[in-house]
Structure formats: structure tokens, C-alpha cells
Image (cartoon, rainbow, N blue to C red):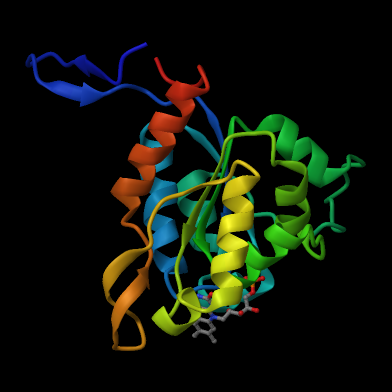
Length: 202
Ligand SMILES: Cc1cc2nc3c(=O)[nH]c(=O)nc-3n(C[C@H](O)[C@H](O)[C@H](O)COP(=O)(O)O)c2cc1C
């Protein structure tokens, strides 16, 4: 399996990503960048299903994700639009990889603690044996909080991978660690994880 193919001009271009990507979006200010990530994943050939928390919906409208992925955003454990499936389990079965970008301090803590109080947290609880990638994003004081660092260590011990956070200018105007990794970097991490798992790219 290769990471790149030659195009008609002989230039190297990334291989197609034939994978089902479950993209969880939690309520960080970087949620707007997740629209770009969803767009890049779709352009790369992935089928992207977005799940948003209520806080994420306060920051970015689901139609933005729907426009770039061509799929309805899911926000509820309960509203199944006529289907009778158990949505969180079906989502995990469907996904080749689960990605959360941005991952708030809250969703990392819920995942570490096995808390299942919305569609995203419940899906993450069921997904831990799958390739799962978190892109944390938060204020530097939140990121360096010992409780957050304990939760980060706990999710890593469960097999979750992290990309970022970077150090730089934060939304609140300060400098420090907590900036979400750029969409291109998250995309590269997804490609690597899919390749390691032996699925999803041609
Ligand atoms: C404007 C705004 C921006 C926020 N940005 C972040 C953030 O970048 N990271 C974070 O962990 N929490 C952030 N929060 C707080 C979360 O939205 C809050 O903890 C929420 O309960 C997270 O819920 P969720 O994890 O279910 O999405 C922000 C809140 C507001 C009002």
C-alpha cells in the first residue's frame, strides 16, 4: 500500500482515502477548523460522518459540515429520523477510524471516565478498540490542569492517539500549549493510522 501515486504530470499526489471516517466535533473554538478538515477528508475520497455535541453546534452550524460532506450531521442519541438502529453502535461498526477535532477538555475527561451522556461520548465509549484519534484544543491553563493531564494519560493508555496540541497563539489571545493541530496535520495522522490498521487507502 502506498501513500502517494504519480499523476499524469509525473508529480506525486496523495493516494485516495477509501475509508469511513467518523468525525466527532466537540465545543471548542477551533470547531470552525473542523469544517476544513471535513472538506479535506471528503476531497481525499473519505466518506465522512460528522457527529456534533450541543456545545459544538453553538459554535458552528451543522449545515457547514453537511455542505462539505454531503451527509446529515448527527447530534442526538435519540432522534433517529425513522431508523430503528442503535445509532452509536452502528456508527462504530461503520467507521474505519474515529477522529475528534477539536477535542475539548470535557470530551477527553468523559472518554477517560467512561461517561456516556450524549451521542459523541457514547460512541467514543464503544469505539476504544478501533483506531481513534483526538486533536485536543483548549486554553493553555486548561491543557496544563493536572486533571486534564490525568485524563489525557488515561485515554492514551486505552489506545487513543493524540495529534497536537501545538504551542502558539490561542483564541483567548494568550500564547501557550493548547492550539489544535492544523487540519493538514490531522489528515496526515489519519492517513498514517489507516495505513497502520491496513485499511482505507489505495
Ligand atoms: C466561545 C467558547 C469557546 C470555547 N472553547 C473551548 C475550547 O477551545 N476548548 C475546550 O476544552 N472548551 C472550550 N469551551 C468550553 C466548552 O464548550 C465546554 O466545556 C462544553 O461543556 C464542552 O462540551 P462538549 O465537550 O460536549 O462539546 C468554550 C466555550 C465557549 C463559550
